[in-house]
Image (tube, one colour):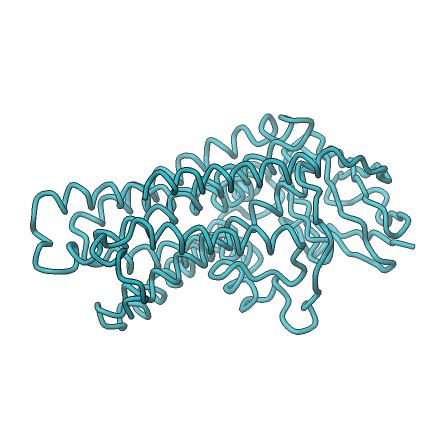
Length: 277
Length: 116
């Protein structure tokens, strides 16, 4: 039972963190609960589908289907997160301010919500399919006591939900005015980290072999399989053996986000030579 | 403004694609290792490979249930469906002993790759 709890918790931990962040980011946006719930539900359904077709998926692209699939859905999440940040740079003030009730802002707001719902769906899908396969394997076998494993799995799921609640509770303590700046940075780092993970999957699929030398090994300091390492892995993309390519991709996503936010951000400020802050 | 922006994204895209292309063109000779998995056991339980060359592990999951091949030190995590094969690419490693296991049965289903 404890083994099942640990396995399930390990998988849902990352999704819990991401959902907590998205909930905090969208705190002031109307109708956000339906969108995020929809994202979670779609993610669970997609995870079941992926689990059913795990064998077929794996055999695609000369056995590298899983890696390419993971890289693809991570890339989708990166685009959605970046787009959200750029969009918020332009419309964030309208949403948070007195114009919040304005019809246009609400309509525009749901566009941004769709992007974040996709991010939530992807987070659930990625780890969810492994949970489904694990639990299915247990239930299909007669050697283990299915009930105790089911209970363990359920407890793991609850712990993952707790991570989500704690992340949200921690972030919403930040005053609304500062929350925007904090979540912008969080989302940019989240996106950069996911892009680096996507690069790692492409490296494993041998699609990306340039600059695949490991730049440093900080495993002695903080292993990315420890709980803190795992949290940092999700939040800022920490990995204890990054390749040069992963670092380049990471920095490129941060740079692109920054440039796009400057270009598309509040139009009145683009003519100001000095930074607004 | 938006014109220069689309130009910028295009340049970025071209740069990324060309980097990926040059990478793919570089051929590497890898060590191939056969490994099978049955009744929560790896066979052979210990495999070996030369140092500083990429490694390809061909894993046959003979059990009817799915397993997840994982190694923290090799940075590998791969779901293998029941009764099916998988290819696992491992980047060139320094000499040492690298443990791997089935994440769904971490305590019993363990093996190691020895790089010499």
